[in-house]
Image (cartoon, rainbow, N blue to C red):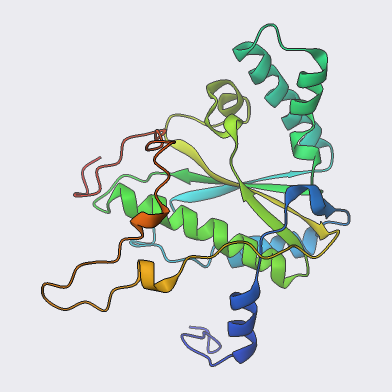
Length: 229
């Protein structure tokens, strides 16, 4: 067993970093991107994620160099299939999606059979996405966690090799921040935190509901109350 495993280590620098970190808008990401050694370290870090049962219910797809253009061609094909009358300009816009950053890493949630709840496996994939962003940031790069329409499109998903067990948890765009990002709105703790005691109403953050949108449609059904799936 390794002797340098850290369960807890006081780090004011890490606290300061986490209190001030920010995703970089995708139009502010530029070259250079990470080199191969940095990509390897980023992926190793991303994989050190809470994972009930040690199932590793996720995997990575790395889009770099010419592969970004190939993926963009698949996106354009998927858009044209949905929109046969799409203009050449719109298809070009879709084709350039993966060219907006020098590196794109797909985090794919893949449910493993067994007794561990599907919901926990999906959450683990989400944690991988955030770990990946933090690892890229720690290497000095900006990152942005997106999905966008093509993450849910059957044509695109099949084109990159996914099957019915696979879902795109995130497409992480990574590059050098062109300008420092501005701060964004953060939740007020008094709206989302409850120090619980019997009978205490919970602060559920319902002030942040956006009723005009309704509830999002899921790409799959999740039974969060059992391990059956």
